[in-house]
Length: 185
Image 1 (spheres, rainbow, N blue to C red):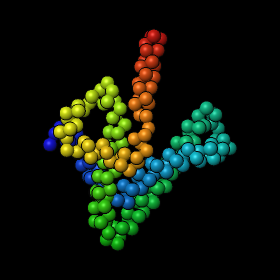
Image 2 (cartoon, rainbow, N blue to C red):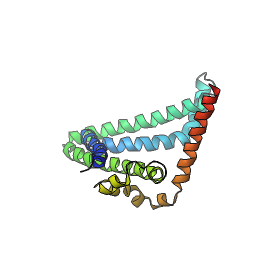
Image 3 (cartoon, rainbow, N blue to C red):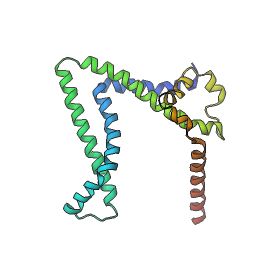
Image 4 (cartoon, one colour):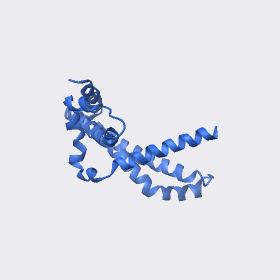
């Protein structure tokens, strides 16, 4: 086992631990809360903003940020309350062990997918100026290639996107911003 494999396995162990500790219901609902919270805040924060304008004296410049945050938090809290209720129900009917084992598996799968997306997004940087982890380390690793190919296998359109241009543009923007800031000093 290579150092790269150890680096890749640590988040998976963390995911397994968290999944077992929280159980499948909490793990699934936490992920759903994040996704639905962002989606809901994007689509419904205007309604919250209208309500806030009528009920609270708030400066207009802060209104979009406050309404987005309140909508996001409201959705996340509601889903987490539902998850807690369902977990309590599973404990009451003696299905907590199954919930925990399923949570362990889900935690590993969730973190595997997250790592795969990160490795996929990092690939253009590796092919460009920064060869880290090195090509030799990637080839010797047992986990790197299966992990890196997981997200593209589920979402083949990722391969068609031009991530290299995006990364180069982002790095150029950051470099320009830093140079501008240094000029101002």
